[in-house]
Amino acid sequence: MELYEELWEDFCSKNKVRLTFPDLDVDLETLTERSCYQLLKQIQEILKDDTLDDPECFMRIEKIVSLLEEHNISSGVRHDF
Image 1 (cartoon, rainbow, N blue to C red):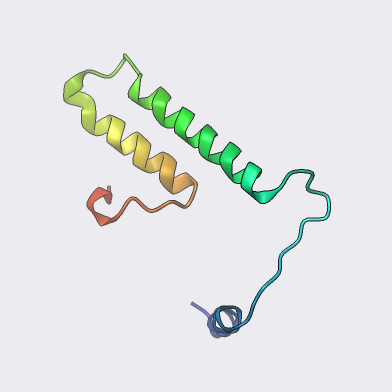
Image 2 (cartoon, helix red, strand yellow):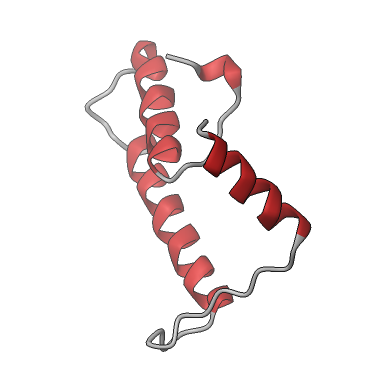
């Protein structure tokens, strides 16, 4: 990480930051719920994929982990493909 990034991260961690989106017509809680719903729906589609046999369960897990990573959600180090 560059020095300016480290300094900025330190500054942000020590100060309250207020982020606003003036053109956003929905509250953050609703936006988060919508995003989570869409993510769960995609995970459900992966699990329901009948083209994968049970021995291919690893592929399902890999798809789910990849999907979570696309959304910057950690699945831990056990799933480092």
